[in-house]
Amino acid sequence: VARNQSGKPSMFSAIYAAVESIPRGKVSTYGAVARAAGHPGAARQVVWALHTCHGRLPWHRVVGANGRILLRGEAGLEQRLRLQAEGVAFSGGVVVMEGHEFQFRSRRAPGKG
DNA sequence: CGGGTGACTTCCC
DNA sequence: GGGGAAGCCACCC
Image 1: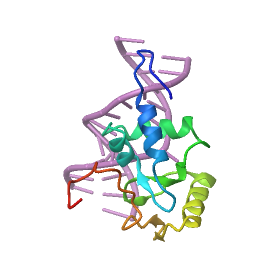
Image 2: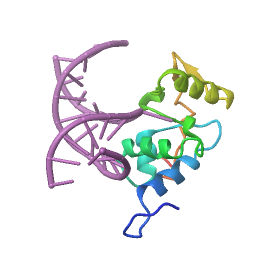
Image 3: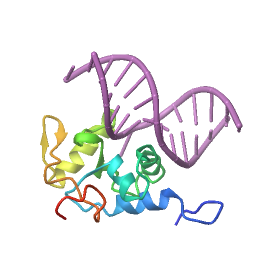
Image 4: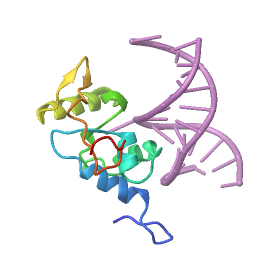
């Protein structure tokens, strides 16, 4: 577990755990992961975490708002292929969030849950 | 402490 | 649908 110089766990740890918690066949957004990690607005740090752990995390399960693939070049293609391989549906080049967006343990809008 | 950077997000036209 | 701007946070120099 990565820690800060102060000794307390950094957002890295929270973000890391959040990304790891995304089950196969589901996806989430940078913002949602940041929220689930307890750091709303830290979407950019999610990118940082993914980069730091590129290869250790299901990075392909993290997409941009509206299920858009933000990666460039082959990376973007690979992400899409990986998601499709997991059964994630695409429409018009973007992920069908409707039913594929992973809902973290009661973090987003209260709704019915 | 300041400046630049990044797989972001939201608001407006 | 595309472009511009502001907000956000941590890493690196």
